[in-house]
Amino acid sequence: MPEPTVIYEKKDYCAVITLNRPKVLNAMNKQLWEELNQAFINARDDGDIKVVILTGCGRAFSTGADLKDSKGRSLAKYREYITYLQEISRFIIRFEKPTIAAVNGYALGSGYELALACDLRIAAENATFGSPEAKVSSSVTGGAMRLLPLLVGPGKAKELLFTSEFIKGAEAARIGLVNQVVADDKLMDAAFELAAKIAPNSAFSIKLIKKGIDMAPEVSMEALMDYEVEACLATVSAPERVDALDDFSKRKKE
Image 1 (tube, rainbow, N blue to C red):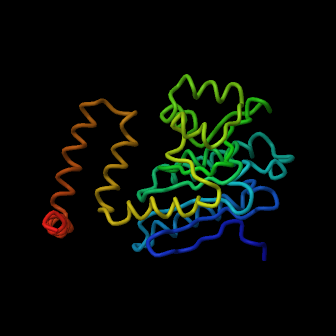
Image 2: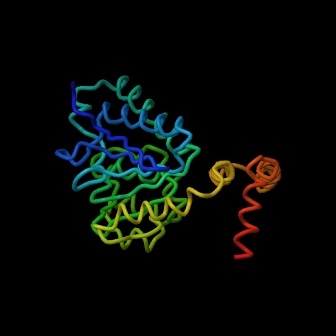
């Protein structure tokens, strides 16, 4: 039986999903994509899981596609494969629970895109981000053509993609690509600390807020504000609302 390419661990309210091909810097082959998809399904279906943390084993988050995996693939098969990967990327982008990418080492190509697909990103100081596609006559996938400009602006996104320039964790934080950069040995601690700030809050509220933020670039302001009305009414009528207000009132008195 082949060694698992993805490790799934449950730590209290967190699902920790670790890419596990360290000998090839977590290069992404079909097996890894399939196991990654299943790991997210497991996290989705577990009611105890409030936050997902995604990271890489060893010296890299992921260096992107495993080119050995595509050797000899016909154009028709390539289309089929990329379409399949896009569906998994859509699943992660639209995942209802908050996702945090804890980026260690290299995050290149589709590994970079996988980090972009998460809601939040924490980078180790040694993290290196880059899209080398233009250097090798390829193109980005995984929603990067939208996700990257939303984070850093269209001009900076074009600069990064046109030049295939690699940037380190500190620069990624400066331009808004990541939420924070931390010392290499503090990466997972920082990810768990962020998860601990999210987990006590209403999962239903976060789900609806996340959906609204994700749909914002696609709809008019009028449509978005109509959605906000429905989201607000849905949350304030939820059974957990009473308990949340009671807890808030008690904290104010303390």
